[in-house]
Length: 78
Image (cartoon, rainbow, N blue to C red; front, side):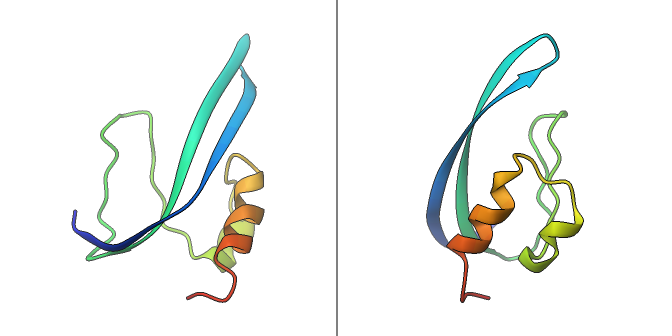
C-alpha cells in the first residue's frame, strides 16, 4: 500500500464493556491519500471499510463518537 499526504488528526480513547469484562482501545485517526483502497487488515478479526464521510450516518461505526469527531475534524475538506 502506498500513501501520501499523511496527516495525524486526533487520538480517540474508548473504554467499553465487552463480553464479561471491560475493554480499552486507542484509535489513531489520520487523513491520507491512497494510491488505491485495496487495504487489508493484518489481523483476521479486523475489517476495513472505506466510507465517504457524508455516508457515515448510514453505517454502524464504533465507537459512536467517531462520526461526530470525523465530521468536525474534516469540515470544509474533500
